[in-house]
Length: 246
Image (cartoon, rainbow, N blue to C red):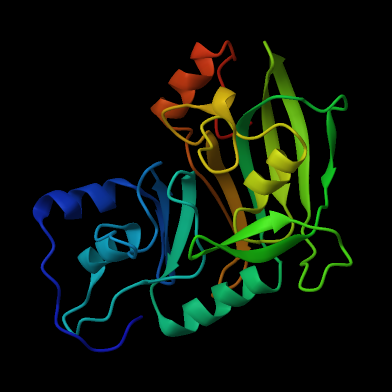
């Protein structure tokens, strides 16, 4: 929880909106199904984000939930936040020490793998481009290269596109997007790592599920229904119906 500050003013519309995204809540955390296009944090001209909308849960002393991990703005799906400082420390450690299990669904295009499953393990490195930090694939012996691993299953092929299930073992910035682009099959709708054939109304990447140890004990498994905009685009490309059980 952030420390004492004035209780923020949140519109009724924003309160209703952020509460409509909740898929799970207990004394320690809240899990949301974040829509594509909603940034997780403010910054670089962004003033409305999941983080700013957490003001809707502020207590009378101004303390509010806090983020413990991130999703890209274009990615939809599961994001959890901690409701207390001890919970934040516990949950953050689960992510940093790689004890979580994350599952994503993506539509990719280009040179699809010939196999039906495998592991992307290209190391990634931070570079400065046009005043912004981004990650790129790099040789493993390059100074600063970070080990990065993403497991994958190719669930369906359709007219040069593929529906993939992905399991990132590490949590580098843009890891899944870079690994897929480096493999020659960038995510449909990826304006940064895609190409002309990848133009689309949204990034077709959805964080389907997350398994994490709860601060109070036991393992929490939360799932995010696949949103209608993802499903509509998938069906338009010729894919069958998919659910959060995929």
